[in-house]
Image 1: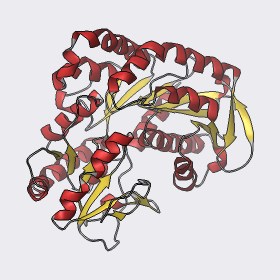
Image 2 (image 1 turned 90 degrees about the vertical axis):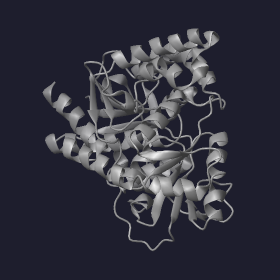
Image 3 (image 1 turned 60 degrees about the vertical axis):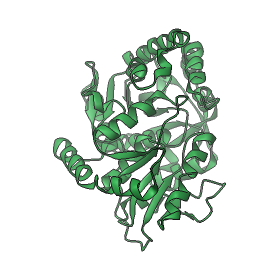
Length: 400
């Protein structure tokens, strides 16, 4: 019986797996409501970091943990495309050389069946391709099927387009020696994108400054995140450092703490950043389901410009402050900066500026940020892009 939702995601950071898992959770409940006599399972990659498994157990799947399964083999294959260095070109070369073969291997493993263990008990079972009802994904590199089940793909920007326009935002990508790798990756990305049942791209995201996404399968959705619940905790006014990414990026973000501390702002950061920040206050971004970004004392967020890091503070009317990008970074980050600045969602802390100046410029953006997100809510009826994507997927499944 096809009763398993398989979750697929980009193999880096914790945002992709958590957002895709939340979409699977909402889709599970839509399916259960429509089919009360049938139960469903959710299959995920085994997380590389133990605390992610704890989040899945204690926050994401609190009412259905026994329906959730984690596969080490599936995780090993997906994680082959994690960052191997601080130079994104190394990752592109990996994708160009290995994506197609790794995808075939993954599909073959699923045909035979992958071993998976339960999220909360000691049960194990083998899940096969014939058990899979559909795939939900966020920024995946490989597909779990060629045509066996529907695939619902969410992304902050189609990789084929991000790379096609990379030369416009990063001169490095005009170099002749990179053209073969870039073109090979564009073709690989198109193969993956063309295999999907539905492509869902949030507003705002990487290429929003260019207008609407292209393609018959592509639709726009609200921000791919659940709006933060209101926090009433008494906090000192300050900024939250959203420290994420590879080690070099984490250190770059952490270095931004001192300028804000020096002018009297409190600086909060995640306790998962083990090196700590002198003078900073370790505090989880989400506690008991409540996001710190919903607290009025957090007047700005600072960090790498991944979209979850931008959407959460923006939904609270708070601007996003980021650093100048490096040419070695993912070209998505360069596009993100352009969208953030074009739509007045935040600013770049450029060399030569002081933190007080940066904060004043950022806070002046609050009216535009509030107006922008109010317009999105009018357009979609919600800012919960995860539930919106799950419902669009459910509509297709129900019609098939």
